Image 1: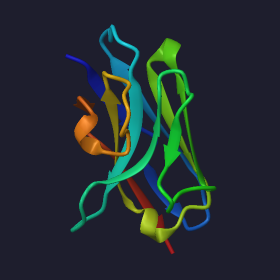
Image 2: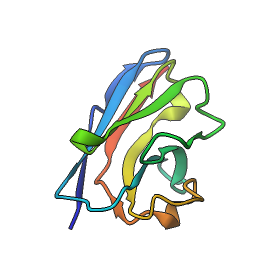
Image 3: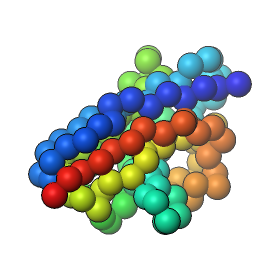
Image 4: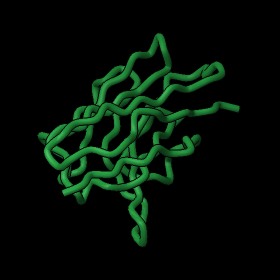
Length: 125
């Protein structure tokens, strides 16, 4: 099966930046979408950003628009999330995910087939 590994999390001061990476190991035969979700303690997992295989479709949660940028390198099976102007409310475990169907409704976590183990992002005030 496909394995996803996130990296790049850490502790930063409010206003700082982090760059998350998620690499998929194992061969994926389809053209797949990738996305980022996050989950804070006591809250449900929420959509952050997603990008289709070709990069034609990119979506962001309203809470991160203008601050976060999603990108991908298909040769490396890797998706990135550049996070700028971080706020304490961005504190969460960040998960990447793969949608084998490269389909619509990419803001819905139910469409994703594989998930990473998560990386912790903590933003201090």
